Image 1 (cartoon, helix red, strand yellow):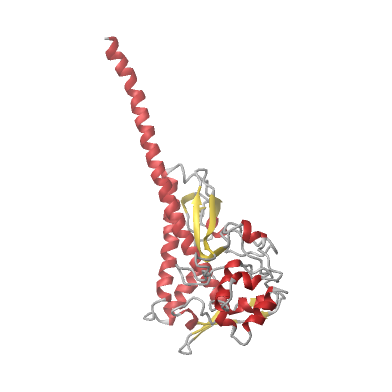
Image 2 (cartoon, one colour; image 1 turned 90 degrees about the vertical axis):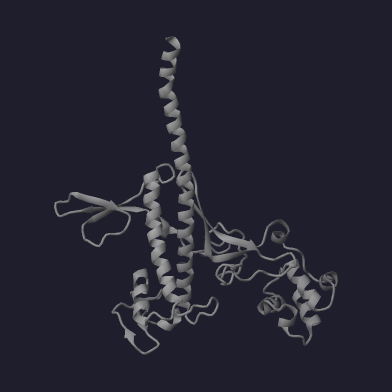
Length: 341
């Protein structure tokens, strides 16, 4: 007998939510055979609520522990919280913050303790379990499962400003507003050079400050819709949308959205969707996707700043050691001269 059939038979008229209160859809998937390999922890919870032993529940069924559950860890991964590591060579490594899928009692960890947003356990496209917080794409179908970190390297571009005579004026890490500029990728020397470390750190502090300002506006109803719109426009991802305030005031732009099939439509977002955002209660999918990336970028900025500070301390220590070594070398001839005399 299939494990799903036995669960359905034992459940009888009992509601699915009664045997697994935290995830009714999982019961449905198991009973329908969509989830053919439920975990032991899941079945133990169901067995307890069905008032049978785990051994009795799996007896004479096709259930076996999946190879993954026997040999690998099960993760519940944050959509938004990123862990940044900068190696001594300057290579930036990222991974998503991960938690054990189940606690010691077999209860599933479902929500991010930092943001309250649902944790990621499987690919939305093919439903394969996420097996690592490091991989950006699904093993099963290749779909991207975590936000893109390419924007971090964009922030590491050094921009050169030129005047009309094409003479360099100065360099900066922010994109210029004038027409005369070129951009170059910054040399990865912020792990060995104090000045470069400070410049890069200031760049990310500036970006973080802007994002936190928007975050504060999102959660403060005292700001007007015009102020909210102004902060959203600074984020740079809303120019193709029309915004409508809850008071009926409209904000319109000429650009249109073109979907994958080439169909054009004017995007209309109600600004009320941004007020007091509550994780897992979004009324607009576009706003939800934006919020995930927005929170992710805040987490990345904080991670970059912390790592750069860590390397700055190492640079200072190395400089002190080098200075001490040079002082000792300079004092050696003097000591020899005094000895000879």
